[in-house]
Length: 410
Image 1 (cartoon, one colour):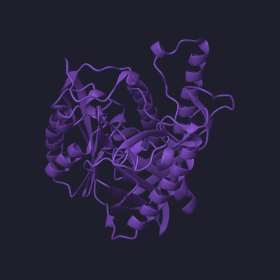
Image 2 (tube, helix red, strand yellow):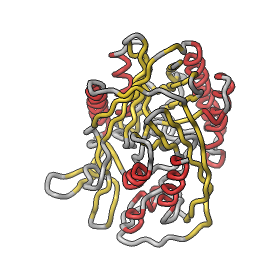
Image 3 (cartoon, rainbow, N blue to C red):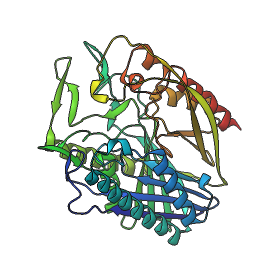
């Protein structure tokens, strides 16, 4: 196979921060690219940001396709969903000329890094082997916890988790040239904290794991691909609800003391990836196939002000028509990756895997844009955060499973 790997740091101007509550940068942010030229083509652009508006993804997708000389349909734009990164905000959220200039600089910084990483992947593409490994990660668990007031976000929930760690390894003459780590969790140790007086900029623990592995394999690029992590979180977080040791939960904020926790979990994830690579690999060969399928999912109205959301034992859902959604599909040998914009939960992942004819089926979320949460039925039944903070109505996730099954079988 002819595969190229690229990497570039997003270098912000010295006076870029503070902004959006971020007061310091503790880890660099990167753009990384995985490009299969032949048999292909297919390109995955991984960006260490929380999210990107659809129009920004479309522009980057088009630019990547032009640089690689391929069709836009063969390009996936992905974010790692670190919460410790600045956002490209919409016009209505910008109140001052300074904020608009800030967005212009951020766009330019991101675009420059994407172009550099994509061009590097194209230029250094060579004949290489691609192998799939699977292991386990204990860095995360279900985040859904039950407080006296209702279900909410925390650490150490007792709900289901798929802790499978999938590693795609690109090798050239027994030398690791690139790795892709897929994990079903949000990378959110530093969500809302990380500094004494605000938030810090970081790729969070998944980003730290990637840079740690890049140190162990000089010249390699290591990408993180977020799976069905809508109801999953790191086993330790710097801010939020955590077990209090007495059977309940307490709300805490560790500020800058949360950074070493993210680094420790990052080193653990890196070690777990190397352990997975000691297992028997499966060579991925054959044609690369990509496809897509659109459908209309039932929608509901939601409160866009997250600060007003509270745990509750009962909720009322107001219908809001439907929303068109697209399912992207990548297959190679025994591997299938189902790419979608919404954040999915573990039960939905299990349902997709149950109907897939592919031995290894992964879900990738926040692909080519974002659409908030698309929760499974149990989240609506219990009025959980993933259902409350969702623009989709009950039944949307189950509809997505049926559409994904049809695309996979086709």
